[in-house]
Length: 208
Image 1: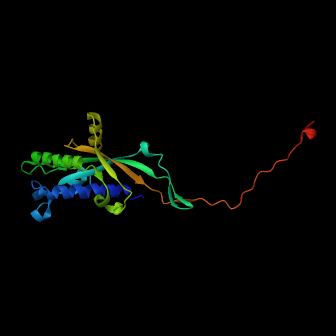
Image 2: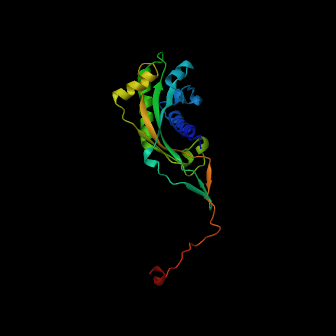
Image 3: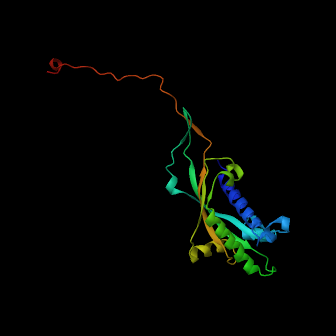
């Protein structure tokens, strides 16, 4: 389905929001019940700052085809129908804590938030069943895995240069396998009639 990308983003957003709001040292910043105003947003850092939002930018910055899963077989939907071969994708997220410069101990808070996120995704890297959100909700075939990426200085610089802003403390995660399933269905018609091949028998006398 074409909504798989946003469903993956919503799954991560819901999970990180729940973890940050329930943390005793961070709930005053993220949990509205305790007066928290920080959020986990799918916006870029620039978009969050433009809207005066604080919290965490969960930005989907790269989408690539998963070459390891390109040979997934088509799924049989009935005795005579197959769904088209799905398109597996890898999603890359830049996770950036954002705190206003006027916030007291803002640098320490950024590092605390990022440390919490790293630990959460280390303890819970796989998402299935009740973890899923958006159009993945209730889909027992979906299983997502988040993996911390190691990015060299050049790749990090390219991402922040694309945003035309100075580097912020951040990490990148790769999430697999996000599958896009075509709506098209191929129909295979059963054999109605079989015609046996015919051949002329030639005797040895006729060939002499």
